[in-house]
Length: 316
Image 1 (cartoon, rainbow, N blue to C red):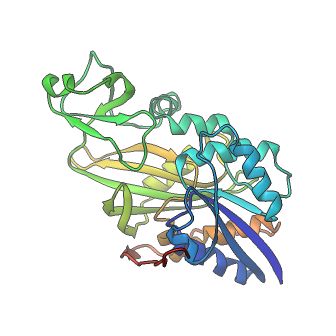
Image 2 (cartoon, one colour):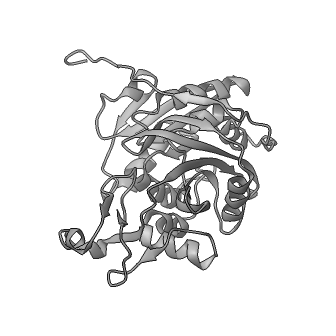
Image 3 (tube, rainbow, N blue to C red):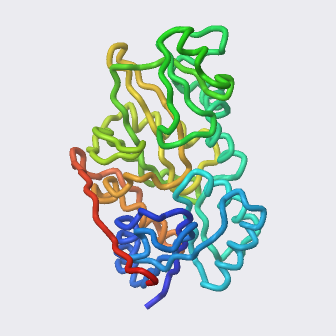
């Protein structure tokens, strides 16, 4: 049986996803072992993976250290699970042996998507619909302020007038857009092969979130979202697992793209269980197998989440 060693970067809570990688390996007659690069050893993924205590993403030595980790542990696949790790993977890909499979987009594209102002300009230049975007001197209230390099809905601020805006420290550091109160949020889980073929694009409605992550979601076959996702993914050199966030203004009946994360999303397990097994696609491409496009995934599959504990005794 083949052995495949997968290194998660910041995959501390991705236990259920690790389980699906192991399952996907078995389908391909391979034993998958999970490693996870973290800042501390006692994290949930340790119940299933070997945790490697590493450096912070901004540490100047991180690429060198990751190179050592990959070599020492014979890592075959590297996957980012937090936004700062995406650019790390893009750079790592340039200096790592080609036998190590790192399915991420190029560094310039990742940098663009990581900064909200650049991403908004990227969408606009290509004609993709986004909420109305304001300058500091031309705001229509209510407006929403998004930290330029924030993620997972952290630091979002809604302002209703100039007095509230004036209370914001350094508002120039935010992307300022139209606030859409009556809305429906969608996430699309997609996978783009090395040949730039879109192997899957599964929309799901985010029914409930916690900390910016979906905890209750349902797949939905909406052709408008699927078609727009394909246009976006074909417009640049996207590669690997991609997560696209959309929002629909229910009053205006308009769909807007909000952001793109060039990595696996936290709720991707729903799309996997619906039939678009992105874990199997990743392993299959690493093994050089022919990939089949998935369009017959199950619509209307509901996912709800719960907490599960992992315990550590002192000094263990």
